[in-house]
Image (cartoon, rainbow, N blue to C red; front, side, top):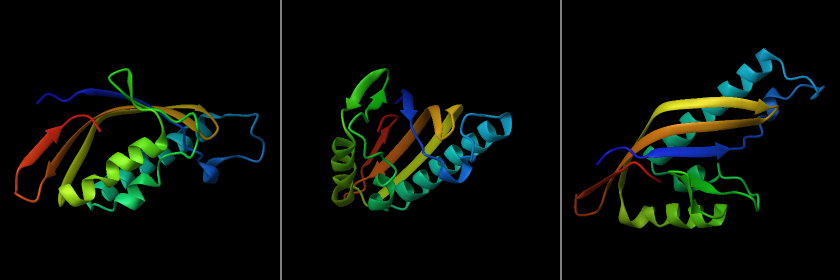
Length: 136
């Protein structure tokens, strides 16, 4: 299966990176936002691969405007929809391996970044069959 393109707009509130004066958005601050987002993505993948589903779903914003986009289309219209989908994996798939590639983080403003990435995930069910996908 070919890897599908995933375009995802992620809003991270990088509280540790916010300056006292939020009117300025320096290159150093933009780099700190990008680093925070990359770190959060890495932690998310670690949670998914360790099947710590509750930890993984904690990364989704509790915001009524949340949408998960795949291939330019809305795949999940709310954070609760994707949380439900992820929780359903727990009983069905005792093994999960996710890898990100071609990740681009574009800081937009203090605490906000746009992220595009490709990913590949292999899930193994209780019978040992695998599902390989490039979409969440």
